[in-house]
Length: 478
Ligand code: GCU
Ligand code: CA
Figure 1 (spheres, rainbow, N blue to C red):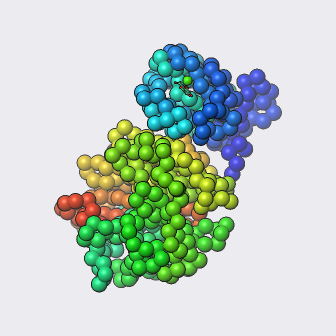
Figure 2: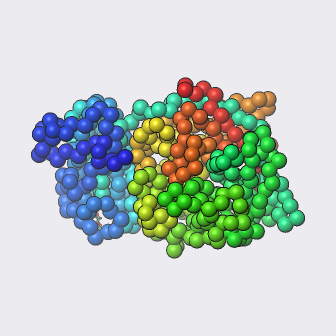
């Protein structure tokens, strides 16, 4: 669905006439407001790459300088804002946020992005009234504002999913199985599709020398999953060397399957027309020539990993993490896929890197103009998943169940038949209702294939005994 059809940008001068002529319905969901169409107390510049539209707003280096957007709301409520900005200075560029002249939040950080061509999204929340609303960012420091590219606006709340969830977990369903050439200690990072009456599961396997590679298994029923043979993909054209965190989907426009995976400092893909034949995958092709600068500038002591591709009608989006508190998103057109991915933008950040860690999934919810984002976090009680929703695959993301008290999946909202075999609900994915690049799930059939482990296991991360289990939502309202 085109974004512009859903919310309508209304220039200040034409506000009254526009409301009469093209007032959108209360269901209006998302819109982008470019800085070049806003009131920019400064210049609209285009000398740093990575901006959208004609340019970005560059304000002078002083306190009190501002940019003001006028956004339209079909009904009163709360908007989640995504402000795309760049800050190549070494320090925060703090700003005060106001809506319709009333202060909303002071000292929003607009933290450094590494360079003036490194872009990030600052996510904010404002109350809105029906009609036009002025959203102003005012520089709170002597550096002025960060460079501001655009404001994305979505209505908060109203998800088709419940805002709290309960799950039942299976026992451990898939265990590591070694063969003559592979001594493996774990199966982890599953990606799964259901096709032609079978589940097709791709996993990372870790060997006793802590090397990562990929494996494939297929079965008709979860009850028979552990009988399935593990096909080691290092013995196929995918080859040996570090390979981890696979994602599988059918790219309908090219009538072929894609398997993407991390290969160290990059992400690569293989393709096939027969998902059931592990030997048929092509050899790896990297998506990028090098690790993008924005990642190098922000990953700190982390690593760039857990790549996740989802496409809407126009574009394919690749999310990734860096274990340093940053969730990235890059994009290319559906027609150009798998080529042409842009430099990533920091889509979300948390100063506590454990709280926005890795293992992100994004899905389209069937029958709704809504996307679901899951990101794994590390807590004292184990690995958990947090969740957000947005009417756009690009966000901005509104919290759904994203706290320790109300997580998407964690120890506190998962029940076991007998003793819990795991306290961790780590890297996995939801069972999709289809196979294609839109990654559609049914909101009435939430099942999550995850990695868990014996709570008493200890030692180096790469030798932990990860196995696969399946969560099934137990309080579905459908
Ligand atoms: C540099 C940069 C500008 C930026 C400015 C600033 O001049 O090129 O885009 O706005 O620094 O410090 O604000
Ligand atoms: Ca400036």
